[in-house]
Length: 306
Length: 295
Image 1 (cartoon, rainbow over the protein chains, first blue to last red):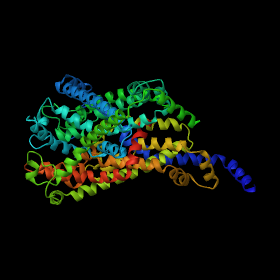
Image 2 (cartoon, each protein chain N blue to C red; image 1 turned 90 degrees about the horizontal axis):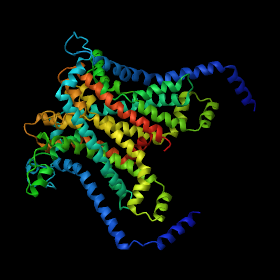
Image 3 (cartoon, rainbow over the protein chains, first blue to last red; image 1 turned 30 degrees about the vertical axis):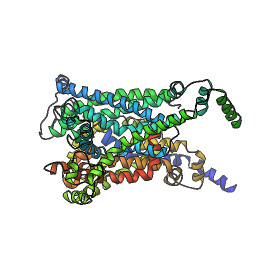
């Protein structure tokens, strides 16, 4: 009792200093993180907006403000529109196929299965592997004569084209790798969402005479639709940031048929030293990503009670 | 209550049209076949990688494909390891991955604790600034950051690889959310015992958050181990390359693609992850789901 009284007296007498000590602790605790975020994220963000208005070059000491010339050049170049088209096809194609397949897989994994944990483990595993290394493996599997696809085709008496040097087939070939890589993540998220659909809800549907298909569309699917929306948005954002597969498997070729935004940013800046021009492309990519991020925050506001 | 509803259900099932046992069995069989087929197809690239890494050149190029190599060529691993400074790549990868994972964690821990548990004027507004950085992807800041590294003379150095990656808005966000959910009484009790803020963070908040901390550390480790773009632009000498970039050099070195060596290299890159994944699969899968829920 006596101790309590003295504690209370202390804290009221030193109230101000204690408050100040807490403020000081707060600043010290956030300082390292905030400093680094300011230097390596906030500042470079504004710097890249600025650079996009210049013809900055690492090798040349003098440079000029060119204002919107980089953007004008970009919008006039057929290369930019080719890469935009590629990125759109890549993003929407990968995400739609991936989500359709992973939803089907999640529904199957949600049934009674022997060794379910093991199947889930295998299906999830590509998600954690090194893309740059697995892209080498896919290059070998796509190889014209001895690759696995060439072998399967020759079993059927068909000739497997060399997909990575074919302007029509190269993008779908990279999309397949991205689908393989991302399938496990969305499957596991869908599975968790399906498992959270309450049993009584499904039982009630069964009692009402709903068949499995009706029960899925009318009970399970509405319950997992927030997840679906989340996976679509984050999938699109991720797809627009794709770099590793392009860099390792094709270098954007043949003739830009598999070139995507981030690889082009990399090539313009670190291949040709066009830092200003490349920054303009980065800013355009940022705007694209912001559109998706905005859609995602909208979704968060609506579904956060989940 | 429970028993009532379950007997009720059984009763209804009996009354309704009974699904013949055979149909149910057949359905389950189809489900099994499809799932196993999917797992085999998804797992196949791993098998292709490992089996090719153990083949002879003749086996690699034989048509039809050699599914099971006859004499396992373990020597391929020795050859590829000696062909390039793989030891150095691995060391660089370990230094890069571990220092970022640990550093990022401590930054996120202190900041997350402060944003959740310490009072400060306009605290939540400052936190909003942290959230804003989540929307700025590394692909956008790549060029300015490289220019800054260049000015600092940090290109092709460990500090250049590591320091710009140390801060993490995501870790801060996740830990803040978690620390906010902890009961105030715990911290009050520690305060009465005379614990300072550092001890409250270390001895109260941290032990309570073991599960999420493990998940965050594992996810960070994998993400940085797999990093490709950043180490690619920051390093320019063989001695500084990390594994994912170093392994690409095998292809450049060989006159014709000796895929058994390239696949052995790829296996070396992926193997540590497989080991970690097998031990921490629960955390990985839960981490994926949690990340999705929190968004």
